[in-house]
Image 1: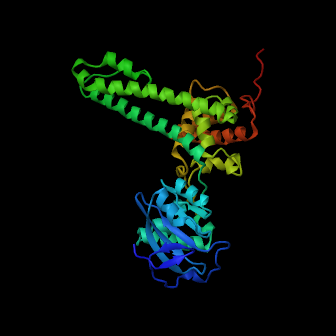
Image 2: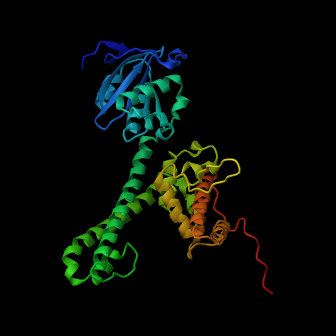
Image 3: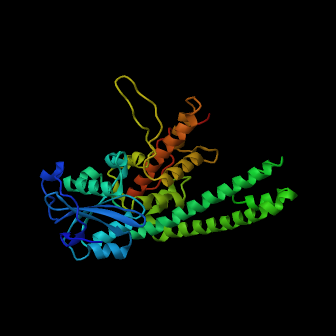
Length: 379
């Protein structure tokens, strides 16, 4: 690529220098240039601004560690803005290792980019750079997890992907059998392969035996994942033991919460903030005297929200142990309406993640009797 313009030693292709509205803003402190990078799977576009906010160049770089290190190593300290995405964790760590100030922008807050009528990679990179120049707060920056936490979280996500694939295979087998007029017995997913093999109609065995073998193998792998998760929770994250004192919460849910918060109890200022952090709080569209009833925001990580809802279902089910939280959830479910049970489950899940963070922070033991009124003694 032919280049003849530099900023702090960063080689960039020639670009126009038309004045922009942010050009008169004060220059960022302690940096010699501002760079916006629109990360792509193969190649990434970047735009460079000088300390006066003037665009002095742009270009394309391969989205590989070697190419980014070659472009940004040995240069003065720069402020570099990227969007959250698949490559943003390792890219941000690499650029910080090279001594640059890295801002990871939250795409949910950047509707100026996502809803633009003239959206393209070059325009996105230029807008990221200009917002980073104007002020990092405009990008609603987020903090990525450490490399070790990300690797441990990969085990949890791999297990979830395996569980999802097994569930789809089980549904497929049941659907094929139903299409012939037969039905398979109701059983747990772990025992499905062996039970379905006995009840499988003879004409379908040739089609279903390979699927049943795959389901059986996936079940064994999921159990292996469960043992790995339990070992990690006990050895690498022993403080999860306090969370496990809650009836219905297992090592998988406790470890997922700790990993998603980057093993940092202070990632949220208050335990109550976790309800909205994981998207378990209702959306609001109130205006004047009109108060709307909307669903939850579903912001944050979907995996933690799913695990919390599963724990809430168990806590409110017939096998759940008596506690103030269980009684409160059951009272919500009895208020009537076809969606009362669903709203109760979500409400319990929201309180559950708050309670989990509180026990993790204080290392207290869950007291099932706390908040329960004393029952009058029988005569």
